[in-house]
Image 1 (spheres, protein in one colour):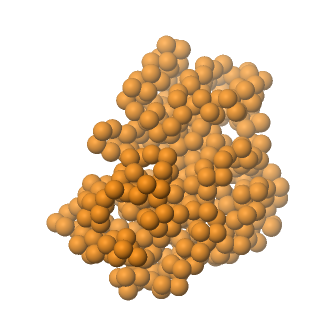
Image 2 (cartoon, helix red, strand yellow):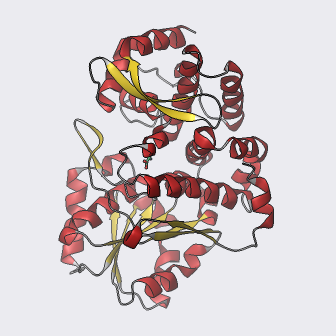
Image 3 (cartoon, protein in one colour):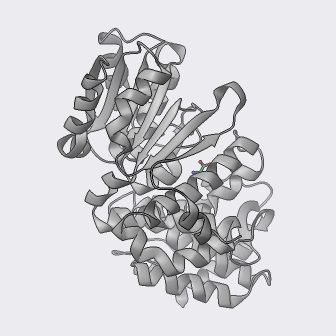
Length: 381
Ligand code: GLY
């Protein structure tokens, strides 16, 4: 599939991607400046609804006025709930504070929570909307590339506990996603790149044509219109199709975890710290998934080299050795973390492997020992 001509032929203006889930279907509206029409879109879809806008301090300082002026102009009544920025807000105490403020504002079930931020705010506010009053409306207005192409779409929400990441949460599909590509102009390059890793993931999983296009256009995607919008749209279409086919991850949705089993272990080993953000862990994880597939005789080594070259060019890490401060664990220790992330059954793990760029598949029977030997070699190399 070649995706570049689709971009050339699409008229200027927002693109709409529909997530088909029966009566819970919803639109993702993608474009530069779509936030300007947020109030109107929301008033049209949820007439008379009040909003609890949940955001973090960083996004509030940069963009909140812009959004709230628009809501006011559309006659929408709202309250604002600001949480501290960072992964630590995905916690029971912060969830409790958000719920308390939602209830204190007498927000009703027919009203909505609007998540205005990156993945942390989306997961936290999304979870709150799933449990407040036993479930209310949710609008996602993601402000990072990662949230626009991945976490705001598909309904996964949740918080972290002492026992791991995202282990408590609900599936809660939004009523609307507004992905304003212009808001990404102010993202620090490292945050932008972390989201770009998830864009690359869609090419690697099932769209070799898109991957080719990314190799030639990544600079333009970072620079802005129209390539950035196109990359977000293709990513959201891939995610929407996967979620529509398997909302609760009983099958094909697991493909979206490509690189994530390796990546989550690295994140856990680095204490979910700034030394390695999620998208960077996914970048290394996707390289490991390719290398391991080559080791098993499933994929050509040339595709791994191609992926490594692209991620390096973009400025993403590709090896465990590149993680500042190291991971403080040997191969066995990392595989033990992988086993916690994805349940082991009789010494076997489920991985997403690949036959080459654009050809990922679910491999449910991987021997933990094989992964350990592979990881030893990677870490020695
Ligand atoms: N981020 C993977 C999923 O939504 O299934």
